Image 1 (cartoon, helix red, strand yellow):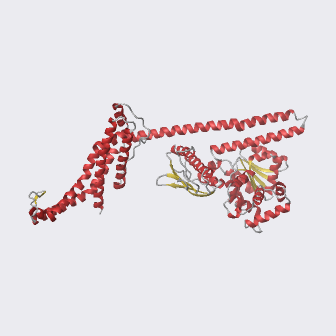
Image 2: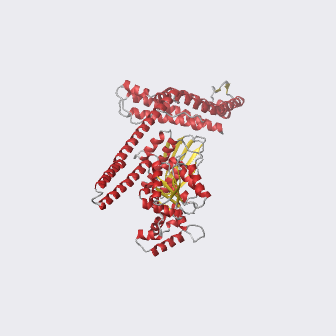
Image 3: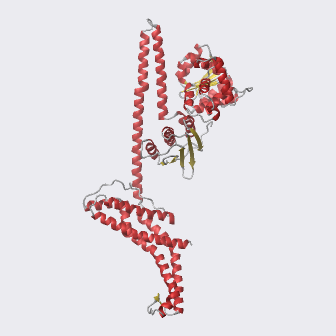
Length: 420
Length: 214
């Protein structure tokens, strides 16, 4: 049955190569036609079509063809002039490859998968001739019935054609799975991005995340500077002035001095409180002391929601990753409490040694509808994790519940012995 | 009272020693790191230890760990933790043995000498003192424990004040009610939390612990 399935697949792939020709024509016409939006629409359709072939290579033959590392087709400018339009089509290597595929290689790929389909079809024709050939030759007067080298005239020649046909159909079936695999290899050869391109994409990603990281740390420093300047620093100055006033009035009005001193002490308490909040915003002390696991437990302890924490972490991740993941979790927990109208919260942290990655899931029973593309909170988390090649996935249908998953590749340090 | 002080910051350690001296207490050891602290606590067995949570050599929670280790060897050894910040997780670990004689307050509190000395006295007497900041943080969240959830708003207030180490009289004063009313509230709290008069268990400590874990 596997062969029959492969035959069906060959057949489907063959049709896809016909569809390829359609996209080749559409894109070709789009280049020539100065209708705004036509060319981007045509190339987007071409990409969807090619993506389907990529996906089929993966699911049917287990051959992964990396998707385009290039930016997805989006708001691309309409170019004026034929040359400009051709250049636009060809300047992105990924798009060029796709265009080449639908125009030339898709056709070749179609030939590969047409072989088993054709053989089985021809084989069935032989079987048909075995059944009806003698009748057709004798009664319908079909003189020129040939099956390969057999001139079908009567029952024995009909049977010969039948046997030949069975053999050919079997060959076709035998070829079918091989053709599907060959097709997938061909898809990979023609459509996979080159090493250089992957490298270029990787460099672009690193440059983008580095600049994000630099931006956010610069913004963070500005915030700290401003908070210190407006908060603790100002309070300490005020305290100095209050103490000075107290010193001057020491002999004449002890009651007023008492009030001033009380004020100075209140200022010192407030300044300390501000410094504490500032430190917590930079790097929570419990994270520094105990690491991610206890810091998240503490977060859950203080959350206004009823929180359940499951942690499977044999050791501590590197400090920068730990901090990024902590703040990512803190942000999602805050979101759940602030926007989701949730009652309960789950936090799962586990280390996956196979993928050498830290996995975090945060779920709540709130009203859902969280979307990283709206608002800055989740987008900020996404950028924070991207610095470490981490990814964020949000599943939050309107009406809830919300499930947020994060995965950050990292290695764990050797287990540290603590009291916990 | 015989006091052990552990604080790595020279100015603060010196200040503490002077403050305690000024109020007539004897500082039997003033150390600046975890291992020395553990040694001093076990050999001196002071009436009270004043311990900074973050100490060398790790600069993480060395002080807390040394205090817990010492209390494992000398049960009920009174320890007052001082910290630049308060962490409910640490408060819970400190209270976990239920023996009392513990306190956990912000370093800021030393600026009010009289109040600070009163805190030391309460811890030395086997009481439990939590910083108002811990208590207010815990009050702000939703309570998950059904036992604690069944407390009335007034009983929550009373439990919060108990956690700050106040005596019945102190609670009565803060809430402007009679001491008898406070005793009644406390009785109700113990019943609702399932804390019945035992031989050695310090019910006030257990109540605060239940509160921290709720």
